[in-house]
Image (cartoon, rainbow, N blue to C red; front, side, top):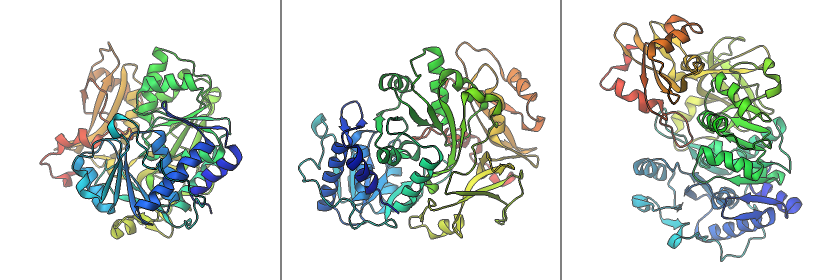
Length: 505
């Protein structure tokens, strides 16, 4: 099995003169990218020790991509930090991981007290590359093995306190191979990174694109209009975004079309996506296959994939996120871990060389999710006779109302079919009679006038009465999201549960 140095070496040997990276301020071919990685490795060897944790707090850039490759290639452990976290959340990750060096493109505030050294990438208002004066190493990757820890990827914390997911070189390389086998890219592809690179959605395809000698275009701060502009300007062929990004770009493209005929693949994942959004996406991006993926940070990150072709909408499987990708097994189990028959809803588990080594310094939590090579997710779903996975919800996000399970995604799916609904999210709130009641938060389209009663009646034609929202809040929007772009249900739900004994449900 290879290590993270191998994609860099392969591209340097075979595709050295081909474009590799363009972040708007810097353009590199694969030879120049490899040289930057070699210099950064030399610098890291002179300032840190093998196995040291090196945290990165920065926006997307060519520097970020360089360090994403160089830190693990040097035998150090990368700790990407969520740029939207508060200082206490960042400090927790630094302390928990015992990070020695923090590399930042901004004022670290009080974080310098939690590490041995802080390195700034933005010295005196200009780009500062601390590795620039170092001679490139000629032994890139030597001494690093596939079982070495490559990164500590802290979970988003949307469902609890963040944990450091331990991913080895083997985990990341294996999943890259799985992705290439399942939906391969070409040397002529242009891949747009639009999601934050501290998250799996932003970094998932880095190794694949570099290994293939293709080009990566990097968007710094996310903006839906800039995504469309960059697809047009750079003739982007592939990109990946979470459903909130996809939905926003679809609306923006339909309102003010750009030339997006080059886009042949739009990968989306991180949360279920409403069928209405996918239908509109075929009009916004008519040449692009819509590839729905399922996975998690713990799976490095991919487990399943489902390609929807705009020209064959009649064959689509609604709400499917596809079969297991090559190299990964997926099954659905009951509370005792026994595999469930086809069609029955249970907890999603996965097994393969991409499954994490465990949670950093958390043996009990690791034992709770890993068993015999299987990772037990916090997600609920089912498999059909062809092995396609259907994601219903997170296990801790199912509403139990009057003894009936209500899956939030099913209600959201119904809400999104209303022509006046732009965004919607659903969660449970306390109810004296039913334990929990279904509650929705909705963002209406501009100039829409529909009220709660009309929207509920619309949903009644699609879902059972006990699943209908008992109440709806209308907000100006957009809905609050985490750094990776997932809707922060916990933040919206919290006011309703203050002082309430959750045991009632």
